[in-house]
Length: 267
Image 1 (cartoon, rainbow, N blue to C red):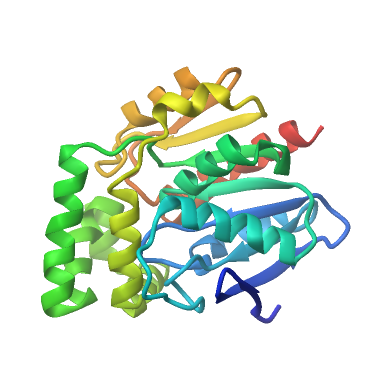
Image 2: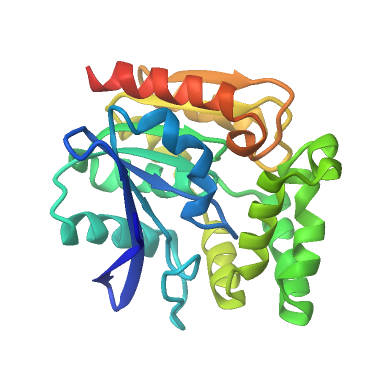
């Protein structure tokens, strides 16, 4: 289906629908430096049962960038504003990396709008290492654009074998990353550098599934374990041998965990 837009909080937010129009709505949020395209390999696994809404968050994909400072609170308001514009009362939220951070913020502030929460390869709290990681990339992107930042990032997101094979799936992610507007990347990385949801997660009381990658250097499995300990009755699953983008590199294993969780939490 074609990409459409809704006007929310002063910007046009791009989104697209897939799947079963009569099914429960899943809202899927992507990672930093990517777009809703990052979910392409999940759509067929969900389309028979679910109505799938993918959107590009602020400054990414086909959604407008803005000059105002980016914050996680703004990302949360953009998400709930998109739901309002599309007249969606509740959704099953699926977020990877930064998309998982947005999901945590939504569940803390607007829990009544979520039927369930699926958090993939994410974290709940920034730290000095992560802030340095952000600062290093911001320095490079300001000077030289997105291409050298991709070179700094690719082996954190994917295993060496997957990078070296240069599959079409790998190339798709690379091309989306390089096409990300510099202002969107700078704004997004500044927002997540201030992430601090850990101490509020015990307020979340909706069905929650956490999917972690066993060898993820960006959001190590310990970060998923922290979230699991804080969110009551959450369930944690691990995909061994994968880095930050297990949904792209190992879609069959990822999709099995994702679908099983959504089916269980939709009952």
